[in-house]
Image (cartoon, rainbow, N blue to C red; front, top):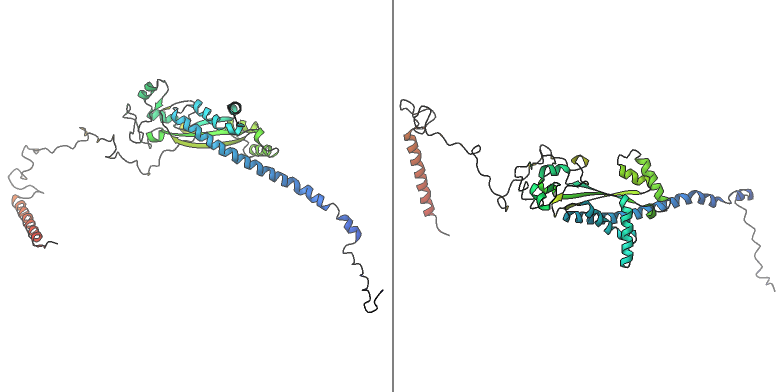
Length: 348
């Protein structure tokens, strides 16, 4: 029963609607419209981020493969075939890898097949001008080749090959702008194209389209061909010291293709030969560089050291015999005083 002392609260009145019913009907579907606008942009951004990550992953593998190619070239006379083989071997994991010899062989074959048209290795150094300055006929005979050869024995000590001692080793005036040590640096520029099969759908095509739009007049035919084939070009450079004699081949570029420029006119000259170098020997004096001995007789046949003229008087600019004796006596007196002072000093 109802307690009269506690009556029921009055019924709550409904709150008025903030917006009329027709306006609420117009708000339906706004989320779908926003999703249609934002979703494509968000999807494109996500795909581009994935493609960028895959490109950086491929770039790290290409850098490692380029280093392996340079190592192979440094011990194989800068041979292009050896460097391409080493690059393909290092790229085998990227093309599938394997858990046994058969799978590894298949991946290596796939890498070689794809790299045949998608890989270019350029030898930036030594240049063809380097062979003009430092080629050695003796090294070519030793390697039994008709191509020009740059020797690699002690390039930091020898300024020129042993059989070409008179070569122009000054970078400021020779054709290569290099020393013999510089010519023994193997610098590679490797260009490789990321295949379409390794690209994110839509994002990879957008990348290649952007490359065509940004550089429509690319003068590099190989790089332009990679873009036209749907590949994303990647360039890697590596430098190593030659461990064998470099043999000239078709992959070597001329100096105008990006090699080092000669030093400026006001630059610091190269250091000379140090006495501690094992093959450093002083240059012998020649007849042209040896100082001329003074003529013991004057023009008139008299001794040049007597200091007298034709009449026996002291010539101009010469000291008489008395003045010479006085100077010697003064020096002897000073030496005697110094000796006495040294004897008087107490010992510590």
